[in-house]
Length: 431
Image (tube, rainbow, N blue to C red; front, top):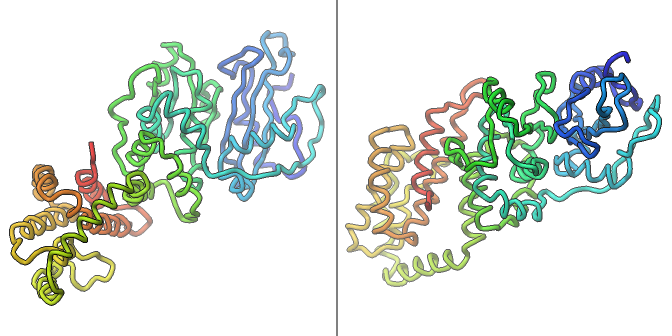
C-alpha cells in the first residue's frame, strides 16, 4: 500500500541501482497484455555500469482493490563482463535464467534474495531466428527495422503479435559490441519514466497517433508496407538487407564471432561497406572465380613483362595521391598492369572513372553528379571483371576518408564522410 517499490534485493545491489530500478519498474496497468499470460521482457543500463535484464508478469490479484492483476517484475542485475559471455544478448541471459529456474514466482515475497550464477554461454547469432524472420515479416521489413533503430532515438513497433521475436532479431542483426546501446521493452506501455529505445505499442489508433506526436519517436506499423523513409541507405543497412535476402546468415555469424573491441554504432556504416565485398565472396564464389580467371586470361595475352613495367610507369599514381602510404593506388594504374598496350580507349575510360570517383569522394559536387550519370554506362562497357580491382581501391579510399573525418572532440566531419558513402552507394548498388 506504500506504492510500487523494490521489495527485495541481493546484497550486491548498490543504492544507486536500487533507486533506478524503482523508477523504471512498471506499475499497475503497465502491461499491454493484462491477461494471465501477459509478459514483457525488458533491458536497460544502470548507474553502476551493470545492466538490468527483467521479466514482468501478472502474479495474482492486485491487492489494493482496484481490480486487475498484480504486476510483478523480476530483475537480473548483470555485470558487463557477464553479458559478454552471452554475446551481449539479453534474450540469451533470460533463456539461461528461465532454464535454471531462477525466475519462478515465489508464493510469498522474500525479504532478501541470494546472488545467483548463470551457467553457459551464447553464440554470437541465433541463425534459426533470423531465418524464421526472413520468412515473416521478411528481409525488407527486418532491414527497415535495423535502419530505423540506428537512425532514431526511439522506435515504436506496432501491428504485430511477434514483437519479442522482432526485437530479438534486431539485436541479432547487430555486432555484439553494439547491442548494449539498445534498451527495449517487449510488452510495457509507454511511460516517460522508462525511456526505452525500442518499445511496442498496442494497435489502438488513438495510441498510435499519440506515439507519433512524441518528439524523437518513430512508429513502425508492421501491418503496413515498410516506410520508404527508412529504406536501408547506409552501408550496414544495405549489408543486412543483402544477407537476409539471400538467407546467408552464416556470414553474419562468422563476422560477429570476430571481436572488435572498439567498435561503436557510428562505425557500422563503414564496416558494412567493408564487409560487402567479403559477403559477395561468401555468396557468389563461382562469380568471383570467373572474374579472377578473366583477369588471368587478360594477363596471359599481354605478353612479356618488360612492357608491363613501362606501362606501369606511364600510368603511375595521380600526383595528388603520392606521398601517402595510407592511400591506395588508383584503379587505372593498378589495372594497367594486366591490359594490352594498344587498348588506349580502355585506359582512358578507367582514368576518367578514377578522376570522377576520387574527386567526388573529396567532396566535389560536379564530379559526383557526373559519376552518377556516367557510372551505369562505364559499368556496362568495362564489366565486373575489369572493375573489381578499381572498386577495391575506391573502397579503401572511402574508408580512409571515413576514418580520417574525426575532428577534435571525437565528432565526425559529416560532409566528408557522407561524400565517401554516396560514392560507394553508386558503385556498389546492384539494384
